Image (cartoon, rainbow, N blue to C red; front, side, top):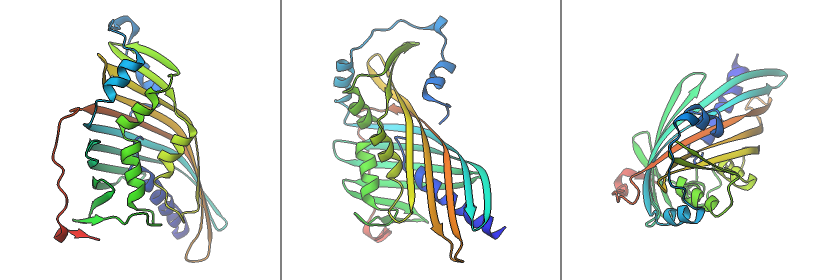
Length: 287
């Protein structure tokens, strides 16, 4: 039992690391399935069709926004500890609410993560000011080191915040030709195939050096939703495989193979509405 618990704890720590900051990265089982399950061609509403250049022009005017995000990581885990083999199904869900000011490079993000089996819940607050990152943990703010080799360092979170937030990634892909365009109940839906490079960046940004973990991320699909030419949100789904090897303190070799899917859905609101983001006072911050 001790060996089994040790392997599962290792697995959950790795999964929580993945879930703690992703966007980019839900309620639907795939982006395309989610759209079809909530709409009916018989009730489709005819709306003005906006060109890609018009949509991109509108997005380029977004300087700040508030968003909510729901995501799930559903995986099958195969673990081997010494000569013992274990198989488990695991799911991590997270709900995120955030405000991002792209113009002033400021962000305030709250994330609630729940792991199954077990139902363990973790709440995390982040404040980002330029390249500085503050995390609220155990009743105090902690300022993360920059370019540190540890798992939790500010450079990874900064990159995710400014490069892979819902608006920045939408701008990046609107400059490309979508794989498909459809109109559902007055909503213009642009479907894109996400590049392997972007998938790996979104996934690997949460794995620090020294974890001995390798990633294989494929089949990425993203939908961007516009209503009356206004960006309202989107969805993303992709397949992920993780391989981890390490040594227990007892000397047993541990190998973990996780495979499954990431489902992510987000909603954009309060576009260009300015909101204050306080900087934690120095007496309340642990360096």
